[in-house]
Image (cartoon, rainbow, N blue to C red; front, top):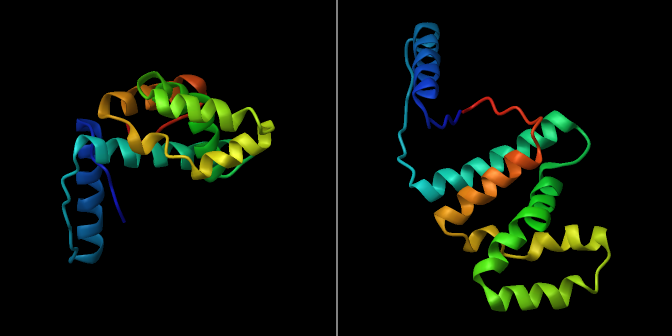
Length: 137
């Protein structure tokens, strides 16, 4: 079991969960890993893709990752990377929509983001999918 604590509410939830497990089993092992801000963001984006797939039940998490990279991430990256912008313009004009989405599997979009760009990307995803309910916030 992996729990990410990123708020006081999550801290209280995890404390409660640990207490439940302790009283049930009388012996538990806990490992603590302190994440950098970018690691938290990176983990969170994958939580979002998983939640989109679970809640919408129409596509996979992989699809939503590619979809978000294409519709939301490329513009963020292009704004600060002229070479990337030129490459994407050349490559994407040759592909139909489905191919563009699938091509995102092979394009480093979010890996090159700064923490500030990643925050913009995550905010863009949450705004793009306003019906998404995130339970770990």
